[in-house]
Amino acid sequence: QVELTESGGGLVQPGESLRLSCVSSGSRFRFDGMAWYRQTTGNERELVASQTNSRSTNYADSVKGRFTIARDSVRNTVYLQMNNLKSEDTAVYYCNANGRLGPHTYNYWGQGTQVTVSS
Image (cartoon, rainbow, N blue to C red; front, top):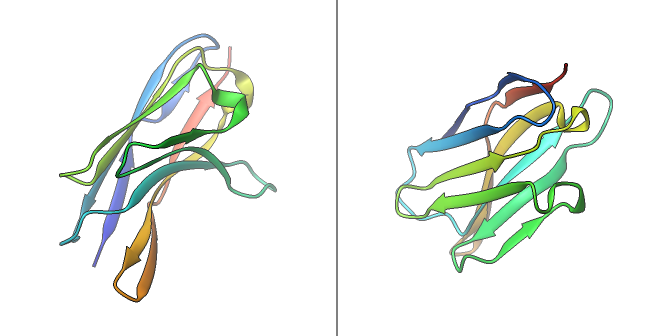
């Protein structure tokens, strides 16, 4: 059974930085893609950043220039470096692993880690 575990969330002030980590266990194959999403109460989960095995990356417009996603594809881990944090970045951040294995698609989620940006 594949499990994703996030860490690194916390309470910071505006302008500060955090680095989120997501480690996986239980997978015997390399994920096609890994991503970070975030969600606030009453809103849909939104994509923050993603990276494929070919290192193609995608960022939400709101985080471009401030956040950086990095993967260790061999270990199926993913990181999110978040700089110059703003109050609107406050959310629960979720790690995601996705792709196709043979005829089957997969989409795994972690439990989430809270990021709060407040003065």
